[in-house]
Amino acid sequence: MSLQPHIVLPWFIRRTRLPLLSLRCVACRYGWATTGRGRFRVNANGKLLDVWLLVHCVSCERTRKLTVHERVPVSSLKPAELDGYHANDPDLVASTLVDPSLARRHHFVLDWTGAWRLVMGSVWRDDPWPVQVDVVFDDPLPVRPDRLIAHGLGLSRNEVLRRIKCDMELRRTTSTGFSFTVLPAET
Image (cartoon, rainbow, N blue to C red; front, top):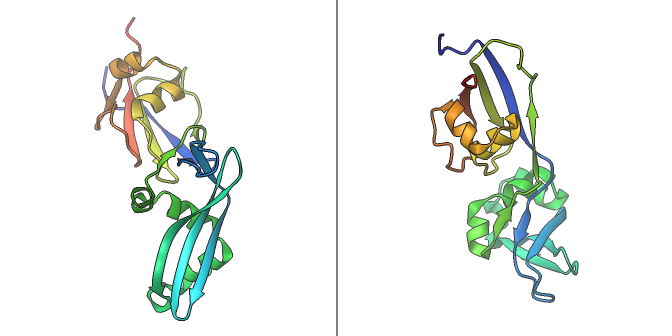
């Protein structure tokens, strides 16, 4: 039997909502916050600009500001970016939220549980083996390949480690696309 894949299937990882932030609330001490509808607050002081991303406590709805830009000259921001802050552009909210420097600066981590879904191509159960699957991420979100493949194929993670050939470490978190080959079950 040849190890060359007979069929190639696409899998897409899509964000369904923004992730939760693990961030203590100063009012109720609850540990999760959300961006809600995704809003920025922009404040101008002469030619200097402050931009904050507003987040809300999941428990008490108290608003907190995460500093995105502090006392920056208006001319240092791209016009499209500045317009996005004023218009509360959802794509700009998402890209700002997943920026690692913002998380480091404000001491939070993102919880992606339930914030993404796997969109799979057709099922190949009757097709010839082996099968190659190309995984494409629409947005960069951290996923462990072994867990994703186990979820998508309905296999245990041990069986994934036995039946999957991949050019990357299956137990290491990734946020970029990858390919893997599914080998037939040993009988």
